[in-house]
Length: 411
Image (cartoon, rainbow, N blue to C red; front, side, top):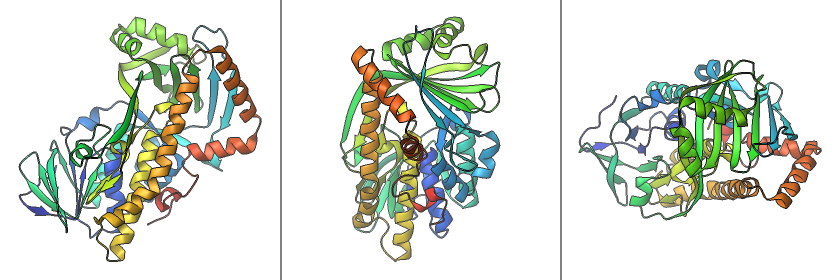
């Protein structure tokens, strides 16, 4: 673990050593190794190694991780999604008709997404950061910062002061740096929580992902390596809190009602946890000498599995803007440079936030006429191969003006 020094001078300080903060650091350093970059993380050392969750990594993000030299380490623990099915039913329905199916490839041999254990992803990014000479300071939060015309003075909680040209906030949906900068957000609570757990089952999933739209919210079964799946189960917050507080037998019985018996007997690995769900969009993505990335800029509903992939797009876009500005001799922390990043990411982020919000409101209910309309809509999409290909490319992160790293190209 690196230590900060008093009055240290660097080029970029990144607050937050999650996937997006680390990816931002690695992407910039890989293209411009002369840049001095420090990542300061408020979480205690080693916390990331105890994360038992997994994340859906879209094809575009896989391309970026490959370009950054991380994917070879991740691949043995990654499970490709070879197929996805969508159903719409009540929990008590004896049969769940499949309304929509997607093949799992965006190109020959390239799945539209992989499921990757969080600690494997974080570990690969940390290993690459160390190779590139990036300092990671653990257990130290940013206590404050003061922006000047030529740089930003960052005060760390351990008493150190760091002079940087650019400060990047990758410190999560409740970002302290965003609040310190006076950046307002649009926010509302869904009254839902997402229960996350890992399930072992008797029969193989064959790489198939499933999303069941139930009245309380989506119930996703996402394939992991071996006969295991990751569950992302949306419930009303009060019900979610009750479920995770129940003993193992009661929880597994409730889970089985939703999971079904198609993969045989199931067993929950570890303790399920629940996180409250809401929509948070920062009104501004940048301020003088400051850029927001990942959940600090946007927190969306997990209904489309795009939260982390939006963050990787931020990392790729910010790295491209900063690297190109540096090559042109521009000030990488100047507001006009950072506005290029903001313009690039703002529309895509707002669009995805609105899309997930509409989908959640449309599907998380038991209103008969609306159920009929949405089921007809799903069935129509299933009969339109061109539209299905469009949706797969969207889910894979390959639509629109993607940054070079997401296309698998070096900056």
